[in-house]
Image (cartoon, rainbow, N blue to C red; front, side, top):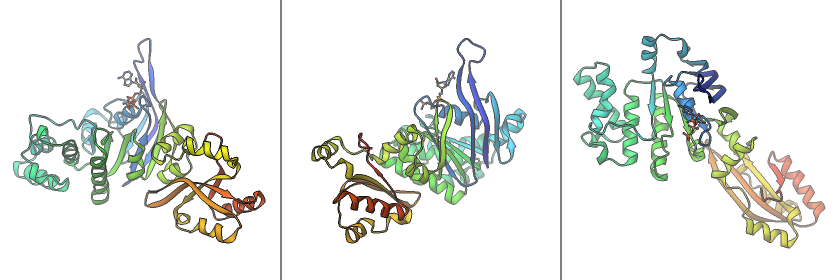
Length: 344
Ligand SMILES: Nc1ncnc2c1ncn2[C@@H]1O[C@H](COP(=O)(O)OP(=O)(O)OP(=O)(O)O)[C@@H](O)[C@H]1O
């Protein structure tokens, strides 16, 4: 549905200090997928999303939407194809002089739709985003979450195939963020729209993305399914992003206690994924082996509908028996490793 091939973006290429914001970006989003791009400030996220709808022309590379390379289209055809790409902005970008109705109607007026058709479509979209009763309200009379719903309704007005979301929830509080993320999921599930979103918030990736790419210094440094990225991040930057929501480092005070007891060599991290998160692993260990299991720290979270457990435990018992237990855990298709000196 959407493919980026070898995208480069160089700003100020004719000046003394050109900035290479994107370096050879390759990415494929399948129809109906929600694909997230996560990165720190300055990583190149905005440049990337702006290159997708050609608000910025890539210096090199191809942007293929529905089989068409947008970078090769003449201006008139590009305008037609752009209508199939909706855009949702962090700051909503609503016209303050227009009501909610007027904002959603805008793209349809520009398209020359009849008054009746506009009324029908706008009211349907306002109902879809749960704001039919706010049709006559102006943006200043709406909350941030409501403004974003209007922004989404406006983006849907031209029946896009792809929705690009630029930090769509970054200006919202956590509860409102959840509601807007649910709405985006509904857009995908009920309308079959493919979504590419950029964010610096890993909870957004965890909550709605099927796949994710981590971008750093204008390059994709890691990409894959959301569950794989969360359960086995490879790069330091992906690990640090995952840590922002899983908070899996052992608290310093707990680690200090363990060191004082001299039992640091029997502290392990166990990562459960999917099915194995449901199996009573710890109680099995306690039943089968003569070691005690002390859970020190941990989180269990749901990623793409699958439970994922990340817990730190201390085995209390003979070290030979502990080694046997570690082997047993590995045989259960579960990751286990000693916790390092920094509690990670
Ligand atoms: N119009 C521009 N002219 C020159 N340099 C630019 C321009 N836009 C972005 N850059 C530079 O390109 C790099 C990537 O910026 P970009 O805005 O794409 O990152 P970002 O990940 O979206 O950051 P943020 O989350 O802070 O918006 C940065 O070094 C930035 O300074």
